[in-house]
Length: 177
Picture 1 (cartoon, rainbow, N blue to C red):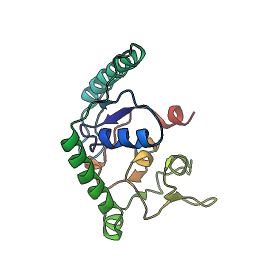
Picture 2: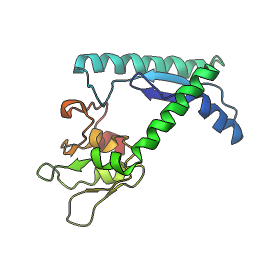
Picture 3: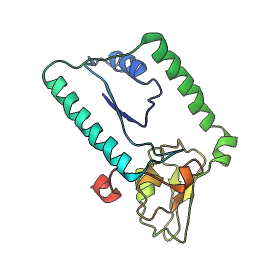
Picture 4: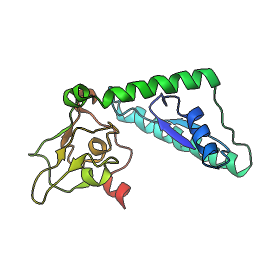
């Protein structure tokens, strides 16, 4: 398993191990790779590029560890579980009506070109788009921010993005092909 994160994984490593074991898999390793943050604070481009380069190097090292039988599934049992359950409780807050209304994502129709990339990328089908209309963001957002990150026109506003900035490691056309 590879977990890319902006400094914090939410304690997913331990619980993911248990989920995989219950499904009959034999987990052999997990690696957390720090990438540039996409919300709250977006760093300058040079810092982001350094993190991506370092992350790619760590991914390559991890792939070699897997090949050579050296991968490990590291976790700190009590700490990992505590962080995980705290993260789960925080995520439950995102599902509340108040949170969905306060942090509702919206599309700037003047910038939008109706390309439907946001609709295709939304993992929970929260964005709907009727023929010849603009995207309509529902109230079931999980705040993965794929829509804001990959919108080629940066037309989707997210109230938790730092000063309206969004970091992009790849372009949407590269991601969708």
